[in-house]
Length: 295
Image (tube, rainbow, N blue to C red; front, side, top):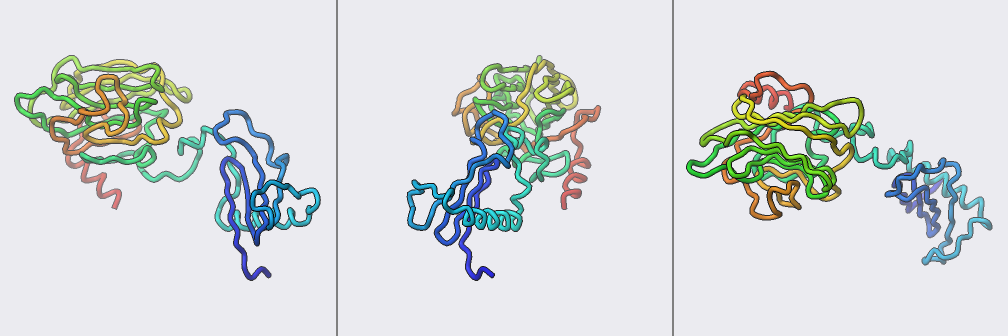
């Protein structure tokens, strides 16, 4: 029986390692950012380093096969204990929880956000590879054309933004900073309190497909356009979802990294995935039902 074990393991795309009583056993399965198909786990080559080799410059696995087997067994025990197995060596598929099949932080098909919120990409509903809508309840100041970001996700390397410019309602989908699909309303956003909405109707038929975009004000269509292709996995490693401004790099070419704050009042923003209803409005009853369902 082992009375004292100091062990640690690391699993990143199948790479493994364990440290125990000065001994270290490691194996590299793949380079995490490589898109190449990884080899079978059984073909991985293990290395072994002794307690006196803190530089890990002398691989002694050939002279100590029994010690390697002992550490491999310990690794499996610890990996099982902490739910590391079964190993998952998929690459980019792991970025999208829908595809990876892992638990998600946000459950259901609706989410409410509020002005000033800035949350990471995985803290909101997954809007990729599916139809979705964004609805914002706003107050437009008198005598000032609407300007600024209502809600955005991602940045200049990829993402989307729902915003106003020179009084017009706009939606931009940024495809990896290569293509920018910008849809603009036909009319200005009126002064006062309104619900502004965009609906994205996904083409379907696989990943990264395009879709049709429709813009609404108080349930009335005010613009439409087309996004030809989308990003299927992740927008960015360090950008976020912002409400009321774009605090990272700009997701749209219509505004810069500063001075993009919405000049009206944002009461709330609702994200919804799946098929949209036909009135294009979010009622007070809808919001109460959603809140109660998440208690």
